[in-house]
Length: 375
Ligand SMILES: NC(=O)c1ccc[n+]([C@@H]2O[C@H](COP(=O)([O-])OP(=O)(O)OC[C@H]3O[C@@H](n4cnc5c(N)ncnc54)[C@H](O)[C@@H]3O)[C@@H](O)[C@H]2O)c1
Image (cartoon, rainbow, N blue to C red; front, side):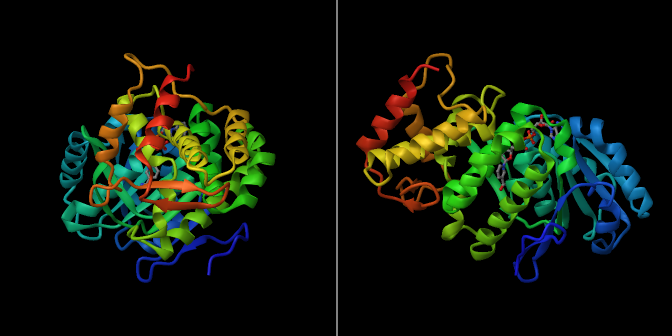
């Protein structure tokens, strides 16, 4: 049973693939000690975001050394572009040069990009080796490091090549967030707010009261929100590991969001979390226009995102946003089922559900209005 006491880890119950998610302060210093009992050989292959390595490798190395764990270090260039076949091949080759064995454990040290890339490498290296996550962005602490989805992007769209591969341990040290740029904090915050919008109206209300101070640096609020989010994700994943049902709710805002990211070329123009924030508002707008969600709930979500400094309109792009391009991206979405588009809609804040019955005219009208609204 999971619990929310601040000192015990959140447990993701998946039978023999179960693992602990530790959330709190000072975890990097305890990493070696927490990892040592889980690995057969006292050695790790660390895959680190280059910026994170620059800022925090020393701390990680000291902790691993103190626990008698040796390690290799591979630095991944910053940015979404590293979730590619080219980077994967380079990484695999670097690992193979160290003559890995079935028990060789990879450690992902960075945000969602490094976590998804490393997890996928672990899933396919020697047909599967263990891996551990030390997520360093808010987004990766509350979402991508938990649940075992790994993968890379293709020209056709996001995360189209990948595997389910669960980590053995997740260490979410909230102290690492102190070096994270504000825009990245905001981006991750979209995934935090998403848990409230999906099925937890009380958490959304807590965020309305505490979100701005959390973003400003309130450590207690950060720890609470990360812990609460991991607990929410663990609960949903434990009930549906392979996304046959309710796990799809975690994709709230993502069908729209992935299309926005594809149109902006997976660039810094629009970060993943920003695209998700806009996507959540678009999903609520669609729900309102379908007559199933009160307009007040859309207004509340928009006001909260705005108060937290998140985008609430699409950014201007060269050539403008085109409705047809959205539909092209939607058809590449992994959630297409027998040609039918799948959307996560809402009957209100905290009342999301999966729908395959979205009227095309209403969807088109929503896209047109968002495309034409000036930033
Ligand atoms: N697997 C999943 O379930 C899942 C879920 C959600 C998102 N994702 C994926 O996650 C990715 C986005 O992850 P992200 O937002 O963490 O982006 P990211 O990994 O690109 O990190 C964002 C930026 O922050 C920097 N950074 C990271 N940690 C830092 C720190 N502590 N201090 C200073 N700078 C730091 C990085 O260098 C990078 O420039 C997307 O590819 C998305 O598809 C996966």
